[in-house]
Length: 242
Image 1 (cartoon, helix red, strand yellow):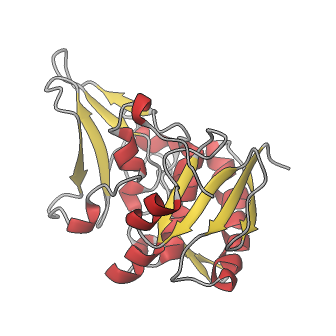
Image 2 (cartoon, helix red, strand yellow):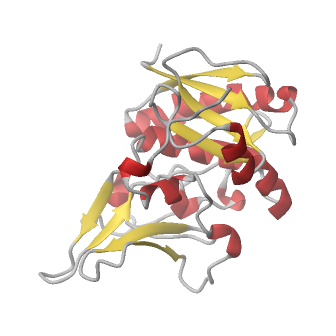
């Protein structure tokens, strides 16, 4: 049994309990079989249906319609116990034609990889410049087309620790689970990553794969990991779910 316990909570109106429940065993397989060996972090998942409450002390992965609904229901930045909380905006995914299970996998793995949303990789090309890369394990390869099937569930590809290691040579090791990335900090089609330019001090912003324009749906949604990374910790709010 893993030390980390995560409640997968269905609070959406666009997905039934049966739909969400069916995906949980496949998400569990991804965590145990694929992610834990690469990252050394494991977790046990428990499905929580609509109008039910998770047990105390669990991290939350909440399936919601959109960021507006999340706020209205009282799902904010941390669980009631002040623990990590991930959000899946399934209604927004459906609106844009994306697979909600890929987003669920994405948010789950990123919560495990950086639960406090405070880790970065520092790259310093010379003495007067430096970039901080957000420690987000799925952003670089997040597009549905690079996902893979576990059972009947499409899940997200994810990067390995080597992706954040600038000394690695192209093709020298495995950089992501799907073997679609070939060097550190590479972004493939549909991918992006948050960076902080230390010299400019201009705050966090996103870069996209080479040659790709920034899409509207790439904007950080209220309550998302990207939005929380930009928010001072003193402004984080504990959830107030009834």
